[in-house]
Amino acid sequence: MERITEDEVARLVGFVSARIPETASLQGEARRTAAALRLAADRQIAAVRFQRTAPPVSGGTTDLAAAAWNLLVAFAEIWRDHPGFPADAAKETFEFDCDSPL
Image (cartoon, rainbow, N blue to C red; front, side):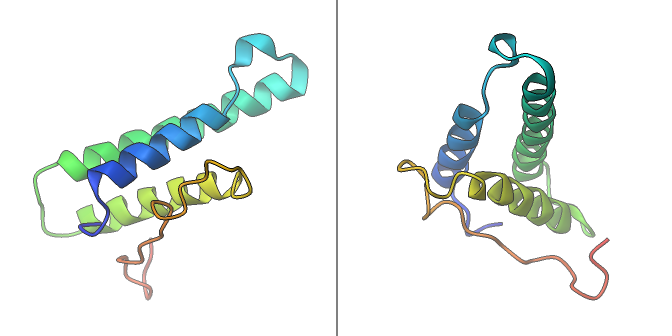
């Protein structure tokens, strides 16, 4: 996660947040889908921000930060064809233990 800059985090967060529609203007299934996507994205954003500012602890902190970041990148990939897609910020990091990812 050290190679991901604050600017890249901000650009990816801004991009993902801007792509998810507000639920007030939607109805039915579209509203539920947008609400679920917003909830999931907001939780990943909060996890990334928390892990980046939390004091270093031995163990899984890096694993959690990498997993949260990678999921946020996956959210952004939904809109890969969008002209504003921040390709240089949407880079995955694989710092977690591949033998035991959970």
